[in-house]
Amino acid sequence: AQKVTQAQTEISVVEKEDVTLDCVYETRDTTYYLFWYKQPPSGELVFLIRRNSFDEQNEISGRYSWNFQKSTSSFNFTITASQVVDSAVYFCALSEAGGGADGLTFGKGTHLIIQP
Amino acid sequence: DARVTQTPRHKVTEMGQEVTMRCQPILGHNTVFWYRQTMMQGLELLAYFRNRAPLDDSGMPKDRFSAEMPDATLATLKIQPSEPRDSAVYFCASGRSGGVGQETQYFGPGTRLLVL
Image 1 (tube, rainbow over the protein chains, first blue to last red):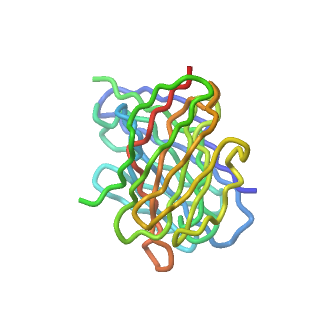
Image 2 (spheres, rainbow over the protein chains, first blue to last red):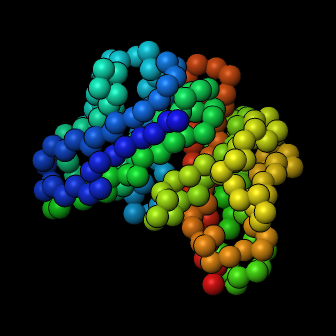
């Protein structure tokens, strides 16, 4: 069965610090997809990134970067120079087939607090 | 800017009453998902449809929950009778399966349900 573990329940940092959110996954499939979603205080779930199991290249989007390592079954998310607006709950998720056309298994989420 | 819409956004009801939640997926998306978010269980998949056909409802309590997709622009989730333990945020998400890079799930704003 698939599983996603986000061991960090809550992280609090001061604005402008860098912060890394950890995500470890378990799956028996060789083809799978990993996702990160952001849930700000308003409650909606905002898609951030999708990565398939055959693409281990790291990705950078502005202040956000993702490190995918199949050897350690991890898909970590780093925010550089954090800002107060980054405060949210961040979810890592896994889909084993269909690249998200089938249901997502979510981690419990990491509550990120950026203090001014 | 295409978005998934959900109604109602908030619902307060008494135990035993019927609750119906509605979702309009993004135009062109052929897969619709229902998720539930609670503090204790986190985000859980309840059911999903592809091309309006139900594919998996194993996450749904069968005795009181039902999900349908009367047409391509409307998905419904019904609870009858409702119980206090059904209090949660119910999210609808849509995606488009069948092609590379088209499988990301986009979430609606959610229906916050409180059963008294």
